[in-house]
Length: 531
Ligand SMILES: [Zn+2]
Image 1 (tube, rainbow, N blue to C red):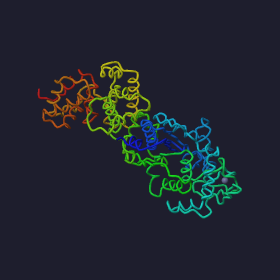
Image 2: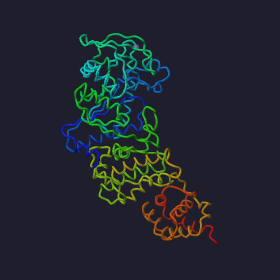
Image 3: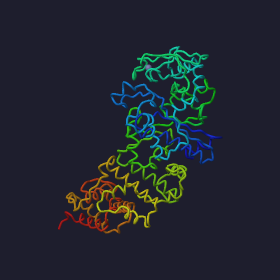
Image 4: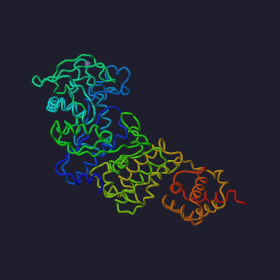
């Protein structure tokens, strides 16, 4: 069974799936794994007939803690201030820093078909008073929470530390304050805004006594997390491996849920990272491509597939610079479509491949059979066609399909053409970029007799109509003539591209005019031959 369906099969009753994010800086492609996983779980639950709500929280009361994200003149003023209170660095397009960057990830999610039932903003949730009872419970249980931090995570807070961050009334910072006392009868806390509490921001030195309610303060990350579970009735919340380690964030929040709020935490489904080009992608370190940048090269359907096909606990190794990682991703997506449409495919299929394919679709309500049956020209083939002057790609693809393209097929084609062009301009290896020589390259004179005879045999064969057909012919002919495949491919590349390597030869020949191919093969077969 596919992992998300397996999870859905084990769930009973109404489910609330939750995820959240701090809206700081760019969304990196690696950070999309979590959102794709929660969306897939919600879809699987719906498929299983379960009543489900997908919630996505924006942690916009979190303090600004990265200087690199601010302009130099804003650092002094805004480090430590809640993201919801920092102005939009891009000008006036949004009311705050948080709204600007959350807008970017909401758009990214939407493009991937991740459409939570509810987006909620923690500044609003705290402001509405909905968190007040958890703030009171946490302050009442301050000694217990200090004990949980000590016991579960080996973090020692001083005895007067209270689990709350007040927004300083003087300077507006939240990252620099510490609550040192709680008076449950007066319902006030005493706090100090310390210049040296954290290294990344400097508090103003003031302090006072305030009510902690109605948006004037926020709970620390782990307590806040457990409070959200309570408030929204969360039943499933997958967390990244970094949060799911022993004694890590998730353990602390689990302990707070059980011991302070008296409830079982939601089901966790720890997920691994996406390792891009062998390096761990981390949003805070700013490694890896921006999601918007990778979206130019990998359409949403293929990007969803990249994240959802492996089990969450399996790390994904993905190197977009690799010779053919991106074409392979398209090929795999096409293979699943073909298998779902009932066509025979090569290689092993994942269990429930139809479900894997359907979850990769952007539109959760799409007609899966129609999507699977749509004509999908191979990415590598399109990448070649895009480079050959004078080719009418639409006409060519229509001829290959053998009937007019439907509106949806035209859409798929244009999406892929744009991706292929973006790929050629960015990640594609040099071997994927081609320049077919207008006349026989000089290097063809170096071909040996066996290679020349091989090319003559190819020229004499009936030209196959497709890249796959050519690829098969290239292999079969080489085998017949006892020519190692490497030598056979080299002969073809030298003949057309004037170099010993290139993109998949079958697709290269299929993309060229067949009379031109036959003529060039014959020419190379006789070049340098004794007169
Ligand atoms: Zn202050």
